[in-house]
Image 1 (spheres, rainbow, N blue to C red):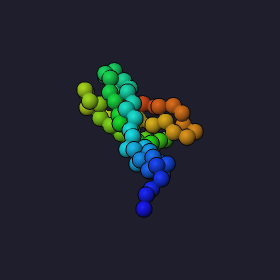
Image 2 (cartoon, one colour; image 1 turned 90 degrees about the horizontal axis):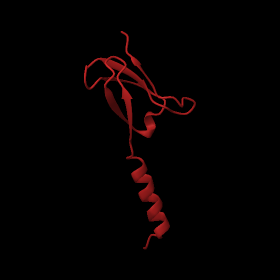
Image 3 (cartoon, rainbow, N blue to C red; image 1 turned 30 degrees about the vertical axis):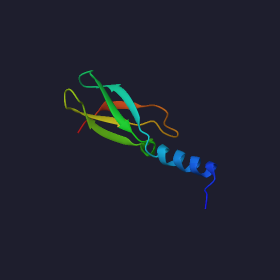
Length: 78
């Protein structure tokens, strides 16, 4: 049985889309050094906590998502 080319193309597009990540760059709110975070589409709108790659202090990051278009970075207070 031969699968039509259109079906194969759709399946490949769906598989590759689930593996895509976005690299978002930001400055550390503690030391000002450049950092980045990798985010998957399913992470949209979530809060993450990541340590700065330079000073190791914790950073709260809100990823953009539906109804939350802004990428927010702030010092984690705890």
